[in-house]
Image (cartoon, rainbow, N blue to C red; front, side):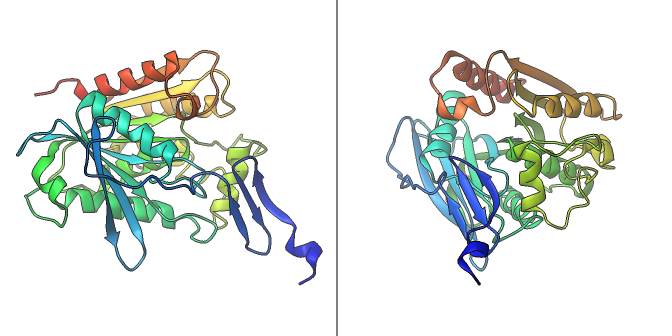
Length: 311
């Protein structure tokens, strides 16, 4: 292969990611690793677990440092963003992001490290996400391989959350749970932060649309039911009673979050959906400015969403 073709870019999203048509990938975000620690750090303790040894599917688990022996807490399963091709629960950005609600809301969190495209194209990311959720649920009867989940997870108070493409994953997991069931688990609510969705009218010129086509080369396009809620026959069966959506004024995918809100609200689904907009902010601003006023407001809202109707 000549040097010209080997350097041809397939997808570029600087300063975070570049992929070449010869298969090479350069990731500039999510590659750093914060080591887990069972000693309290910022109000939390963490450990890493291997869910499927053969595939490398893994997760990072967080518990509050104030947790007591035998204490049961709500569970938050989190799916990071990054267009299916970057991001990691182990990097500083997502480690710190998950540590905050764990300490704030007094919950157990499981942050899923699904495999990434293009090495592992969609639907692998969705399948890994479902396997991880089923693995969490497998601890409901005091069984399963992970002691922190056996001892501290309240499986009658389970929530899902994710940002950007992770928000899309959250919808797909809740829809699948509504159709297939999630034995032993009561999924109370899901939170989609600046989620990615699409519609048939989408031109497909924004970064998020190009990311989808790159990560899922077998997709039918923007009528794919995994990203187009209007085409998803499972929508009215989303398996929870409450949905919280965050959008931002300056996000190029803002209208996609609104589209999901309106489509879910009129689908026949019997739950309550709420949408909250941050004025003057851009996509996933809270990840990179976690201490700004509106990021702290987002954290408070998420915490109250989890704590609502606590019994």
